[in-house]
Image 1 (cartoon, rainbow, N blue to C red):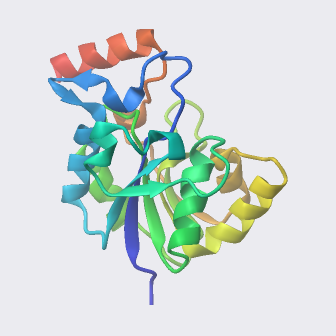
Image 2 (image 1 turned 30 degrees about the vertical axis):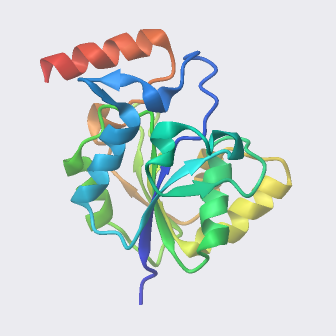
Length: 196
């Protein structure tokens, strides 16, 4: 029997390269946080949370959604994933980064439909380097021991964790997983959304 699937929207990043909170960036008149949250209506999960750092708890927009506060050192997305796995150890986690403005419901449904609970994770591969994309992926409970072991050893890259796990790799969904980290990438994303 497969583990219940919960969803985690990662919003705890420091947004250093963007120099603005990526979750609050406006796309078509709506903050990216709410755009990404709305996508979760298109997949069946038992519960959904917004992942955040402890110092973000008083932020108004994040506070309007169910929070899951980092319970480990906030060292990037792995902190959110580990915190979710610790809070609900028997659950699989559909993890989505909040800096994917081109992500659409079709891509998210395809990921959930392709889930293979016997693997440690189900993930798309990047269109840029054919490596697994960890921040629009399903992390099964079996991934938790390795992720924790790497964290304790000071290795915080979730992509490198996926490379050590047994994963079900899906073909790239094209630009849907292009993330936005810089003002230049933000401009490109706006242009792409306007023409689509």
